[in-house]
Length: 299
Image (tube, rainbow, N blue to C red; front, side, top):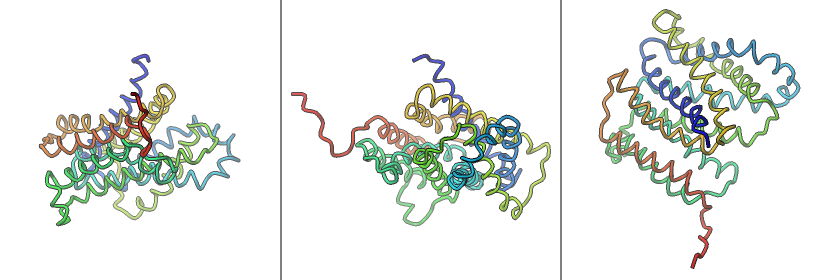
C-alpha cells in the first residue's frame, strides 16, 4: 500500500488533536455556546456554494431522510463538539485527547448492541482494559477516588461526547441514506446549526473580535471541513477499520501540542491511563475473532 495513502488519516487526526488545544484556548476568550454555533455557521457558509446545487438535486431523498440526518447532525456535530467546548473549562487538552481515543472502542461496543455484530475477543478484553485506563485517568492515578465522586466534570463530559460520536458512527453505518458524502455532510451541518442556535441565543453571545476570530476559523474550516475531506479520502483509500486505527495517535498528538502551546505537563497517570486505553483500543481492532468461537486445531 503506498505510503501516501496514510497521509490523509494522519493529517485528519493531527488537525483533530490540534483542536483539543483550540478548545482550551477558547476558555475565557469565547463562550462554548458561541464557538460551537459560529464554527458550523462558518462551515455552512463555505460549503454552500459548492454543495447546495447537489443537495438541491437530491432534495427528494433529503426530504425523506431528514429525521435521520437530524439525529446524525445532533450526535456528530452538536453534542460531540459542543460538549467538548464545555469540557475544556474543567479538564486539560491531554485528558481530552486520551478520552477522545475511546471512540473506536466505543464504536465496537455500540455496534455489538445496536447492529447485533458479535462481540470479538479483542473487543471484550480490550474494552475491560481500556475501561480500567479511563478509570485511572478519571481518578488522577487512583481509581478508588471515583468512589468519592472526585471526578472532574470536564472528563465526564468528554466520556459522554466520545459516546455520542461513537453512536454517530454506528448510526451512520446502520442508516444507508443513498446520498453523496458531501450532501450528507452538508445536511448534517444545516441541522447542527439549527440545534446549536438556541444555546447560542440563550447563552453569553461573545462578539467576534481579533482575539477569537482565528479560533473560529480553525474550528470551522480545518477542524470541520478539511478533516472531513481527509477522512472520507482515507476511508476510500485504506478502509474504515484501518483509518480508525490512526485515532489512537490522538493522545500522543494532543499531549505534544498541549506541551508546546499550553505548557501542560504530563503526569505518570496520563502515561498509564493513556497506554491502557491505547492498548485496549488496539486489542479491540486487531483481535477480531468472535467471542465464543473456538480457534482452529492446528495439530
